[in-house]
Length: 92
Image (cartoon, rainbow, N blue to C red):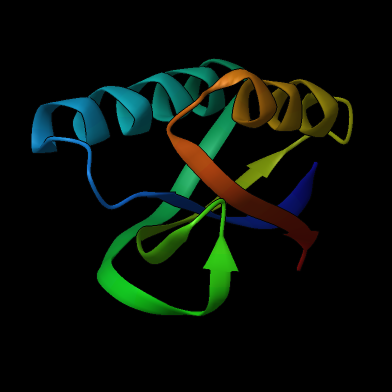
């Protein structure tokens, strides 16, 4: 089991309910396949450069413990979700 940290950016024009749905889907996957140690909503921030014509995004950070094989599925979930602009997952 490895320690990981993932951060993802969500569009700033979606509702709070839509943001919570995105977060819940990610949280559900990670708790099913690992253990979440830290979750933090970093709020709405200005991006360094435009991403798909968005200047602002909502940042969300999750630190978790899991096996290496869950990362590819996690990143697939990020890619297919239209409300997620960018993401990164690193091993801590």
